[in-house]
Length: 130
Image (cartoon, rainbow, N blue to C red; front, side, top):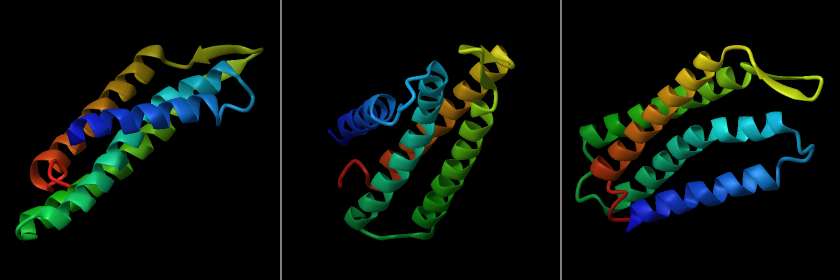
């Protein structure tokens, strides 16, 4: 059931950021919001995992290590997001990518990191029971 909340939470955050925070209504901002989805998912996995630790029978060294790993994944995910935003520019009102393959590769890497964070949070930190 909480996995559904993950998906709904990220969906609501994505829609809110895409529609509400896009003040200039520029296409480049929409791309940046799309690139931000994996970073949001990673941070949501951290928050759900941290909340889930309250339902664990014992908070062990393994739980601590996984929490720190998810924090590290969140930091790396945000760094990848920031780097990916530098690969998209708006010249003359036209959205251009400095490297399309690079942007896609970074986005896919960020998606993989966020999925790892969700799986760790859901499997080991009690996010499925909170």
